[in-house]
Image (cartoon, rainbow, N blue to C red; front, side):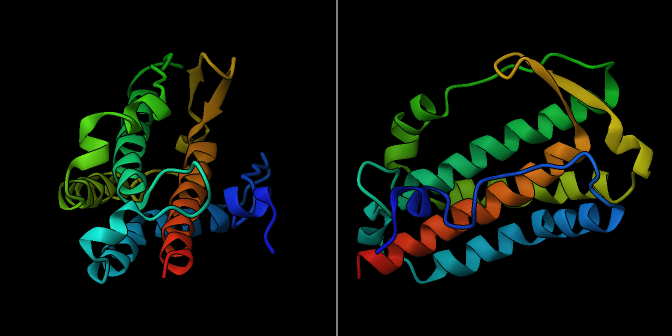
Length: 177
């Protein structure tokens, strides 16, 4: 039987090391590049009634998770671009739980968010693949965390984030069979 942490963090909690290698960073960029196809492949077989499946009690359902990924990765992409074009900009946080409670996240079909994820990731990967290692040291300030986040950490976080929520979707499909 899985415990609460195993359900919440099925691939483990995110950990970042300032010693992230260039090879680790390139692998994380590849994860970000392929996430849209992983999500699309997973979503192909999801029936409309399965979109309300959850992976644990009181969690988001599959529909909300997919819309959350679109919201979250759009914000990450914008934060990334701000850090590339401004000197340590302060980003705007958002309340992901409130966003996931809005009508679109709870009722809209998932295809628009899958398109958003595909488009954002195409553009984001295009930028990342054309940066120098030094560029990933650029930072933005996160006012809720009270600290600077490097673009390297951002890449590693969103590589993890996509795989984390993909596993949640897979778990929701397995639990509610």
